[in-house]
Image (cartoon, rainbow, N blue to C red; front, side, top):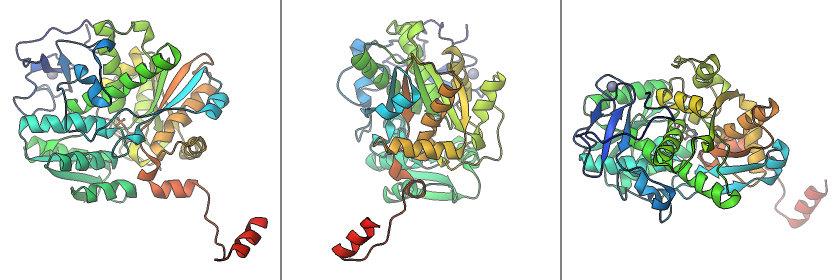
Length: 420
Ligand SMILES: *Cc1c(COP(=O)(O)O)cnc(C)c1O
Ligand SMILES: [Zn+2]
C-alpha cells in the first residue's frame, strides 16, 4: 500500500529507529534511516524522506502552548524556541458574509516571532542541527525562510548563510536576515536557482540545509494543522471542512496532510473528518495547479515565474511528491489567481484588521474564486491560512493602500484640507 495513502496503517518501527521511536523513511521505496546518525536530506534512491514515529499522538497527549504543546507529535520535547506558534484564528465577519459560507476563519501565521510560519519549522530544524553537531546553517529563500533561519540560527549561536534571488525579496525580509546576522548572498537567478546551488553546497557538506526539503522542517509546520483542528473543535464542536492555503514549495500542504494522516493512524481523527486541502498559486507561478488540474503525478518545472506575491514566486515545488497525494486523498483542489485578485484580497483582509503580505492574501483570492465556481459550498466551515505579516513587504502594502495626503503644519490648514 502507498505509504502516503490515508488508508495506510500506522508504520512499524524499524531497527534503525532511535530510543524515542523516531526514524526517517523514503516516501517512495520505503527504506528507513536512523534520524540523527548522519546528515541526510533524501533517500539513496533520490526521493523525499519523512520523519516517522513508533507512537502517534492523540489530542489528549498535548499540553502547554505554541509549537511545543505538540511535542508528542515531534522528534524532541523542546527545540530552539523564541517561542513560536499559538497564532490567532481571526474571525472575519464581513468576508464570511460575502463568501456566504457556514464559517470563515483566518489562521494568521504572520503573528509568529519573525512574522511567518517558517518559525514553526525552524524551531525543530535548528534543534536537529544541534543534535547533528553541524557547523553552518543555510537556505535558499524567497525571503521568509531566510528571516526565520537567521533568527533561530542567532538564537542557537550558529553561523547562517542565506541565498536570495537578487532584487526579488521584499524589504522587510532582507532587513531581518541582515540584522540577525546572516551572511546574505544575492544570487543572479530566481529562487529555484538559489535552491539548486544551496543543495549542491549541502551535498558537499559545506552547510546544513534548512529548506523544506529537510524533512524535520515539515514536522514543526504540522502544528499549524493541530492548532486549527483544536480551535475549530473549541469554537464549533467540529473540525473544519476545508483549509485553503498559498502554495510555493508545497511544504505546508505536505505538512498539513502529514498531520492529518498521523491523526487518522492514531485513531484521533476519522478519515471522513479530514479537511479538504485546497492550494492557491499565482497565475505566473502555478506548476502545482497545472499538475492538479491535469491529474499528473508529477509537476513540470516552470523556468520563468513572475508574481507580485514574491513568497510564492517558485517554479519547481520540491515537496510536490508529498503534497499532490495530500490534495488528492483529501478530495481537494488547486486554483490560480491573478496578481490583481491577490491585491484586492490583501486590501479586504486589511479591511477586517488582518494585515498580511501578498502571498498570504492568495488564500482569500483562491477561496473567493472557488466559492464563485461552486466548488466551495455554502455549508462549509473554511480556514484560510495567511502565511506572512503585512510588514514583511512594506512596498506592496503601500502600493495597495491609500496615498498619504500633504497638508500644511497648522490646525487651520488641516481643517481646511479635511473640509475639501
Ligand atoms: C514560504 C511561504 C509560502 C510558501 O509556503 P510553502 O510551504 O513553500 O508552499 C507562502 N507564503 C509565505 C508568506 C511564505 O513565506
Ligand atoms: Zn527511496
